[in-house]
Each structure stands twice: as structure tokens, then as C-alpha cells.
Length: 271
Length: 308
Ligand SMILES: Nc1ncnc2c1ncn2[C@@H]1O[C@H](COP(=O)(O)OP(=O)(O)O)[C@@H](O)[C@H]1O
Ligand SMILES: [Mg+2]
Image 1 (tube, rainbow over the protein chains, first blue to last red):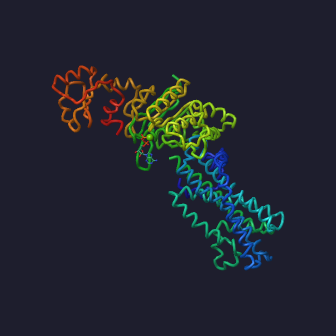
Image 2: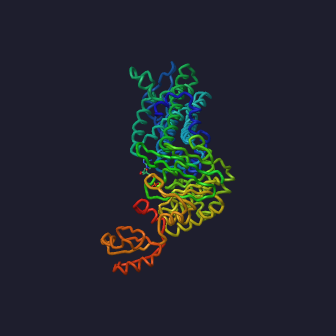
Image 3: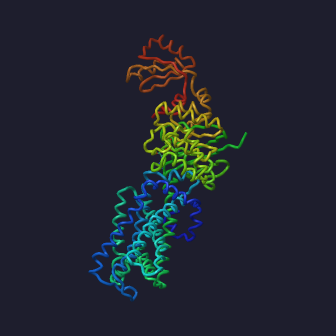
């Protein structure tokens, strides 16, 4: 079966169990063991979006003034904060599912060892993606706490941003994982860095989508854009039908990438 | 006769259009130590990976414990231990953590993992290195840890791909002794090696493998008896002159073989052969009579030496 025919599969659960999905949590257990001694590394990626937020509040916010969202006027830092929160979930998930997965896949050969046991390729893929998602979630929780402390959350609805960030983490971890299975070596990590920057800047993060004019459709291609829209809605407590579409986009991407990634691990390591 | 643990029929492994294993038949009985002896590239690891259910067979049938790896791979893997050719130890974990997490992959409880890890560290003589980082272990220690790790699920079948390659003689003997203990405990073992002494020491039965095919099968003794003479006379003439002396030994023993550095004369009575060589006026720089080994069997069967 070719990799692309996977995309047509619509029952990923039975597909994944065919690739041995039984104990993905063992991968997470392994990482908890490995990171016990270096938890600082896990936490460090959280600071980048935080520094952005601080700089927005200190300088840019004063220059830009208020922004109009869904007919309401909000201060610029309250506009940007949910987007940065979505970005931090993305960062956490991508960091882990690319560089760390590449290391474990090609150099540390962690998965070869696991696949000699009853663990299956889908256990590896789902376990790794879950771990990356958890990492993104840790950043998101920290970020939300800072937002609350800075008075940027508007109601208890803001807590809904956490499950949304888990979905964002899932999406990017699945994309990162699949992409990494195609990497030839460390030099390919440059591609990730090159893609992350425009994604971060052009996902309606710093400007409302209306300001992109005729280019709005390009923004809509970015998974982060859909995540940002969801987190913003949670923070504002404003619910519209379009949110279902945003969530579905992320969910479909995740499921397809996850099944495809499991297949790739099977192909790469069980040959 | 009990049901064989492993049965392979016409087993093949292809990588794209290259055939690494070209159709082999193998049966391994419970409690046996079975070897694949062959030079690099013979297809030993490819075969081992198929038996370990980490690499699908391209053709033929393979059954372990009566089960098909394509269907029950995870069930089979739960009952076997694997020591791959290259260590796949987790270098981000300590020695004992490597054992713990591996036990968890087999769904053992944490308490059981700790209990078995303590025992296995003792078995592998690594107790005092329990908290060391894996990277800092010597080659022999890593290999012992790999073997200890492969035993965490108390496997009925242990697969060892070149268990001692790259180790110094002392470390090899320690490992052989550990493997012998496992045999006494009734653990079936399948191992690959390109060391004939290792094969002779460890294996009850072995197959000689070359270029993806099995060229002979039997116990080390049977193979030597069948394919070689009882003794071998090794004559070393000066470097580069050995091939000139080949024709002059014709008829001394049953056969002879000219290698770059020596001439081998196969004869049941080596001393008599040496006397005959002297009688013919041959004056080698050195002469040695020894018993035939699996190396000689391999040389006869393939025309090449194992070390190639
Ligand atoms: N993953 C692979 N892809 C392509 N060729 C391979 C692969 N693994 C092994 N081979 C080839 O198959 C042949 C047999 O290799 P292997 O089974 O490792 O032999 P051995 O273990 O006896 O040295 C070699 O020629 C090797 O290059
Ligand atoms: Mg090999």
C-alpha cells in the first residue's frame, strides 16, 4: 500500500490497531524517566512566546492601540495573547515531535528497541505524538496562568483554551512526527525552522484576518490560524458556528497525519 | 519429538531487487542452541530479524511456537528475547532504567521490573554499575546489558546476533559462560557468528550460511567429520611463495588448499603427512599439525575463509 492511499482511510482506529496500538503510554513512561534529570529543557521552550507577550504589552500595544474583533474593540495585548498561547502549544509540540523524534528514530534508535518487544509502530507514533502534545500543553497552561495574572483573560471561558491547545498540540505533533519520518538528517531540521517563522507570523497572530485582504485564503491554509481563531473565541467567550469548522480542520489533519506517521514508522523500522 | 520452536520453509528476504536470504529451511527444537555460521553479508542478520518478528518475510513460511509472525507478531515477541547485532540500549537512561523500561514494554508491573532487574544485573555482573550512564560502559558491559535486557521477559527463546563480535577474548569468555548457564536453564538459543570457535563452543547444531543460502547443516562434530579430515597440516612457506608449493603437496593428504599465507594439507594423520612433506624435500618456514575446525569446513564448502 502506498503512503498516499492512507489518506483515504477513514477508520483510523482499526487501522492503528492493525499497526499494533496497544500500549502507547509506555513511550511516555520512557520519556518521563529520561527527562527526570533534565526537566529544565522541557520547560525552556515556554519562554519564547512569553517574551513576545511581554514585549507586546510594554511597547507595541501602545503604538497600535485597540483592535476590533467580532465587532468589539479589545486592547492589542488582549488580542495578541490568545494567539501567542496557541503558538506556544504549537512550539512545544513541534520541538518535541521533530528534533527529539529525529534523534530517537535515527541516532538513539529508541524505537528499534521498542519494536523488538510487543510494542507496535502505532504505539510508537501515538506515544510520541501524545508526549509532544503534553509538552505543548505544559506551555499552554503556563501561558494561560501568566495571561490571567496580567489581566488578559476575560472570563472563566478562558479555561476552554486548554483543551483547544491540546487539539493544537495534537495537530502539530502529528504533522511534526510525520514530517520527521521523511527527514534524512539534522540538516533537514532547517526546513522546520524555516516553516515555523512564517507560520507564527502569518496565522492572524498579530493582525486580524480581515487585514490580509485578498490573501486571507493563504492564512486559512495555516493550521495555526484555525487554532488561533479557537483560542481567541475561548478567551472572549464568543461562540460561533465557524468554530466547529476550525476544530474539524485540526481534527482531520491530526487523524490523517497520525495514521500516516504510524505507517511510516512501520515502513522505516520493520523492513 | 516435541513440536519445533521455529520452523522456516523456503524463507526469503528481499531488499528492493536484492535477495539477501534466498530460500532457507530451518527447524529449531526446544532447549537447543542453534547457530548460523557465515561470513559478513551471508544473510544471518536478515534471517534473525525475520525470526525476531521485526522484519516481514518476503516469501516462504515462518512459524514460531506454531504462530505466524505476520499475524501474531506481538504475541511471539512477548515470548522471545532479542540481542541485535548493534546494541540498541537507551543511552539517555541509566543501566537499571534500561531494564525497567524494557520490562514495562512487556507489560510487567513496576515491582516485577525492579525485582527482575536486580537479578539480571547480578547475572550480567553489572550490579555496581546500576546507576551508571550507558554511554560510559565498556563494549563488553554494553553487550552484557543487552543480554540482560533481552531476558527481562523470561523468554523461552533467545536470539543473539553476533553476541561477541568486537569484544576482547576475556569479555567473550565471560559471555559464553553466561550463555551456557542459560542453556542449562533450558532457554532455547539461536545465535549468529562468524567465529568458528564460538560456534563450536556454544552450538548443539548449526547451519553454515553463505550468500543467502544454507550450504551445510549438523552438529559441529558432524560437520567436521563429514566435510573435513581429522587433522590439518599447515605449512607456511615464505610470503608470496605459497602458491608455488601447492603442486608439490599433491597426494600427501586427501586434499590441499592454498591460502595467501599458508598451504593447508588435509589428512587424518597430520604427523605422517608432515613426515611425507619432509621426505619430499619440502622445507617450510614453519609447520603445524592441528585438528580440523569449522573454518576448514567453511573453506571447503565455499572456497573462501570466514574472515573475508
Ligand atoms: N535494510 C537493508 N537494505 C538493503 N540491503 C540490506 C539491508 N540489510 C541487509 N542488506 C544486505 O543484505 C545482505 C545480507 O546482510 P545481513 O543479513 O546483514 O548479513 P550478515 O548478518 O550475515 O552479515 C548484505 O549484502 C546487506 O548489504
Ligand atoms: Mg549481521
